[in-house]
Image: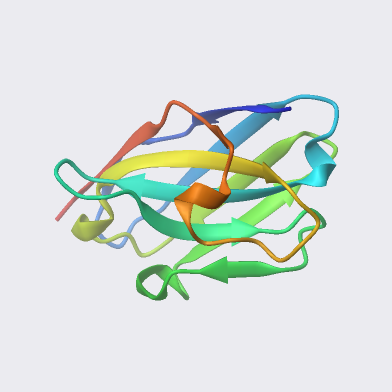
Length: 125
């Protein structure tokens, strides 16, 4: 199993950039699809982006396409979320999630078994 730990959140400005990192402990990181979700108070957790085990298949929610990029480094057990052209509506707690699969990455939270503690991203206008 893996234990994701997020970092890199903080305060950003509209049209600016932030990069989130997620270090997943465990010796079998390469066997896991990884994803980012986000949540604001009073709303359900929302899918943001996901990447397959090899890093050659990614999927994004429509609101971040063209602005966010998910990537992974299997040698470093790390997945990244590069967030460009930030908008105030991107403000949320961002969670990293993992599931052991070699299939295409899933987009629903129930498909993921391991979660980080979350990192706050706040975008000011």
